[in-house]
Amino acid sequence: MSKQGINPHHASAILGIHSVSTPYTAQDGTGTTTKGEEQRANIDNELNDLGVGPQDESSPEERDSQTLLLQLAERTVLQAEALAKETIDRAREESEAAAQRLLEQTVAEAEEQARGIMEAAEQQRTSSTDKARAEARRIVEAAKEESSTITREATAKAQQEAE
Image (cartoon, rainbow, N blue to C red; front, side, top):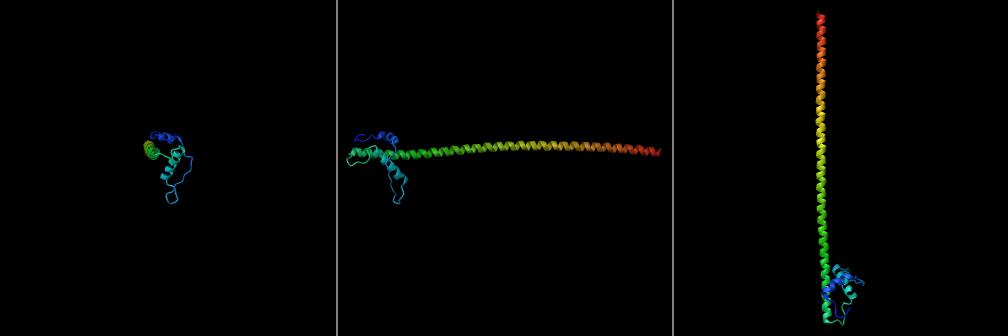
């Protein structure tokens, strides 16, 4: 890396290649590190690793280039966070839609099964009713025949005794 600085248009490519190797801790006054401070610290560390960090002998052009790189890195982080949130939201919406479709399908299947069970029960009830009616008719017919037989026998016996 030369001391002339880095072209700001290549900053995102450069930042995407390197990882943070220098530990850095920033505090928000309460003793805890904030997310933004931590991100800025990570960016500062990456820029220092690349040789573009703050230097006493930096020219105004180098400082401008470093400022542009830092701003670009911060914007890139914010865009990445927004993209991640959008992706998560879209995945959640798709998941909820899939769950709704599955629920609707399950309800439709359950309703169809219930209809089938009700139809089978109705058929069985109708069949049982028809069988009961047929059995009642058979019993009535048998009783009529028995009654006729008894009546004939009684009439025949009465005629025999009358003779």
